[in-house]
Length: 256
Ligand code: BMP
Image 1: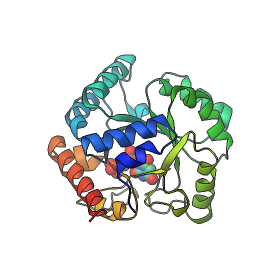
Image 2: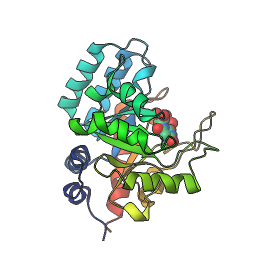
Image 3: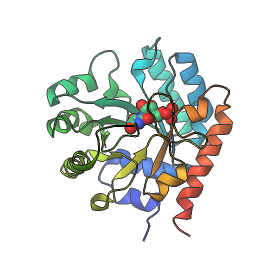
Image 4: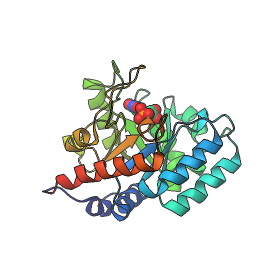
């Protein structure tokens, strides 16, 4: 029988994962916004607008041209105001010792403010062990990229299978996957899916889009939407509401 987000929250070992599922139920939202803009002003402006409708704000902090600590302070204030999880889409991909530093040091100090980060499985278990040393004491969570949305990507077949096995060995810290579908052998893990649009099927740089309905029917838990919400000529509030409703209706359909 399909479990609700709220029911699943109680059975998860990781605190961030519990919090995420609890707030999804509370806010009735399975929408994450991928906030890929390059100035602080735009970033804070859109985050404030979409905040009421999202469960998660996904960042690429290194694309901001005027990044500073004030941005992080303001982001944390918006997180308190609107109640969402912060996911820095850093896609770590190096040996354990290096990712540990990338996660906690440098100018971004990601571990201090990001509830969730993600990593490629390509380096092997050491990448998880390294990130875990920093993240677990802070109750953070990690997603592994089991699949990608872009055309011609190599995260398929045996690579995807090996990534799933790796996640299963670290269930205290790995809370789920970036992928387009649920995997049978680990149904409790969270599936977050990028490459979502209600209007178009691709961009001109290899991105491929599916609808919220498509992916939630395949077992996705959270839809990640970027340009579909704040792209040229869009009203971010209107679009955030539209995607939030589409995502939530697709979720409710599973119980009919
Ligand atoms: P958009 O909806 O504007 O295409 O943005 C998608 C977002 O999801 C981007 O931030 C991108 O980095 C991320 N993403 C993706 O598109 N495909 C993947 O396989 C993994 C991602 O993290």
